[in-house]
Amino acid sequence: MEDLPWRTSGGRGRLWSVGVSLAVLLAGAPSSSRAASFAVDRADDEPAATVCTGAPNDCSLRGAILAANALAPEASDISLPAGTYLLSQAAACSYRLRGNPNLMTSTQLPLCLNAPVTISGDGAATTVIDANLLDRVIFVAADAIAEIRGVTITNGNLTGFSFGVVGGGGGVNNQGTLTLADSIVSDNAAFTTGGGIYNAGQLTLMRATVRVNSQLPNAGAGGGIYNDQQSSLTVVDSTISNNIVTANGGGIANFQGTVAILSSTVSGNTAGQLGGGIANFGGSFVGKLTITNSTISGNQTGSLGGGIYNHQSAETHLQSVTIANNVAGQDASSSAGGGIANSNSLVNAAQHTDRRQHRARFVWAGLRRVRLTGGGADLGG
Image (tube, rainbow, N blue to C red; front, side, top):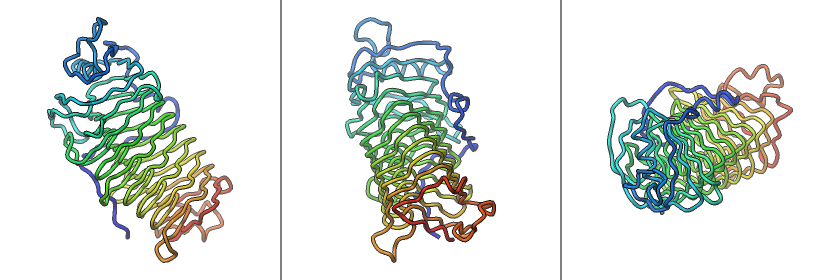
């Protein structure tokens, strides 16, 4: 059995159900009835600029977030105009981690969301939140229900302990409920898991791009996204590309959580060990991966599963998926499954001609609609 990826402390909680219907995707968004609206009017990172009355120069992004947190559990809107918001100041935040009832307070650089809040940028091409390689960019606490749209989250560089979590998420660490829409998470790094995003709660990506993120050199997982135990990740109309990790899951690493990918592309990602595009792991809880109407292409790994790696006690369901031009390993002795590698000994799909016999773990839903080109499939146990 292959080693499981190193896991950060994110706590435990109930298993979030995942769906791709509009009702489910919108369920986690903050209410449309708003207690307050904050219009950011200065680009510097001034924690004291919390007044946000509409008078000139009285509302920074950090100040607006602090003001919104103070109104919890009421919901707030933050309007963020085009510009680059360079993080440079620390501020205090009270927060809970998922599965931990204790309220903690810490003063740190990352923007800390601890309330129902929507941050609306002017578009990812022109509205940039930049951590300047000093720390993580954004932390979403367990009590938060947040939506971030129309921004780029970049230059996070997590090298140590932050908000009670060791090393998870260079760009974003989500402990609560977060929707990222029409946004880009790029050029971030973390020293353990989730170069771009670490998820310990409920995360939805809609028309988002997670690209060119990395996990710094040690045995970590999830170059683009790390989905932790009993957490849920839903990816819709999005792209996960050109992320890199030294161990497992170049694009996405799922560790005993639930991942649903719909109408999306996972391409050009690299893993040193398992799952160049996606690594799906099980253990005490079954890792569940469902991919529909999507493309897994041009990913590579140093060992097993250039496109997808499915671990023991994990389930992968594919429907209308193109898996093309993925590469596994440096030589025949260390590689298998350029397209797909399945390590679950309960199933060997290659030995079954009747897909109704595929009762567990690796399920080809609509076998004729799964295209596998430019790479092999190792479906044995």
